[in-house]
Structures are given as structure tokens and as C-alpha cells.
Amino acid sequence: MEEKNEQKKLTLEDVAYTEEERRDIKLRLTDWIYKQYDISFAPKHLFIRLNQIYQGTYKGLDKPIPPEDLFDMWQRKWHYLEKVHVKNESHGKHIEGLSLIWYDIAILLSKYDSYLNWKIEHLAEIAEQMKRYKDEEHINYTKIAENTTPTTQKLQSSEVDIDDFLDFAYEEK
Figure 1: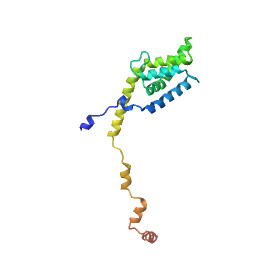
Figure 2: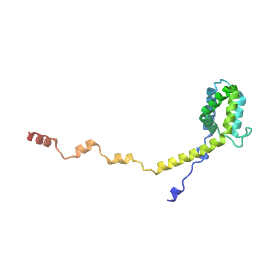
Figure 3: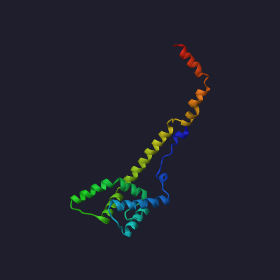
């Protein structure tokens, strides 16, 4: 009973990534930036600033933002950022290239705290779903398979003789 009351809650540390996974995420983020912003070259200081963001040393940051969070947030907010781009264009504010990337990063950084709150709530929902799934009764198909005998075994074990059946069928005519 005590086990059920002590439900383990998922935390951000439970979904931490290895350094190799983070390196892969950084590469995927870079590729995504190239694709989304239609650029073929990015200056070295873009990567320096991204690393500052990851380490939490970028101006105005009070905590590091892991690459997986930045990438996830950027993807989730992409449609919102596109709307901001259109709005800026309609007001005569034309931003493109690297300046647009910096502009979008500034928006994302300003929304990181709310993203983090959403992520924590989302993890709590996942933990609750996992608990409900664990508590549900599931069908054990291996037990079903063990308890059933194949049809051929049933036929072989039966004491009915086919000849007796045929004789009986022809006698009634």
C-alpha cells in the first residue's frame, strides 16, 4: 500500500541526455537553422553565442538552456515566429539572415521560463499516464497461448471415429 502512495514523479533530471546525444542535438539544431532560415553559411559567432546560451553565460540569462530545450522550443514556436516575421514585414520592419536568427533567439529566450513550466507540467502528465498504464490489468498473451491446445492435437485426442460417423450418416437415408 505504501508503494502506491510513494509515486515517483518525473523530473527534468530523469530526462537528461548524454554528451553524445547533446552533440547530436546541436548538429540537428544547426541543420534545422540552416534549413528554416534558408542560409548556407553561418558565422563563427553564431555558434559561440549558441554555446553561451547552452552554458548560461549569454547576456541576461540566469540559467543554462540545454540544446534539447532550445531545439524543442524553437520547433514548437516556429509557427509563432513566422507570424511575428509577417507582422514585422507588414509594419515595414524587414529583418533577414543572421539578424532574424538573433531576433528569434531573443524571443525564445524571453519565453524560456514559461516553456520550462510547460515542460514540467507535461512531464507530470506523462508520469500520471505511465502510472495509470502500470495500474491497469493487461492481458497476458503467453498464458493464453500456453492454455490452448492446437486444433490438430484436439482432433487426435478425440475418441470419435470418422467411420462410425459415416456409417451413422448413411444409415439414416
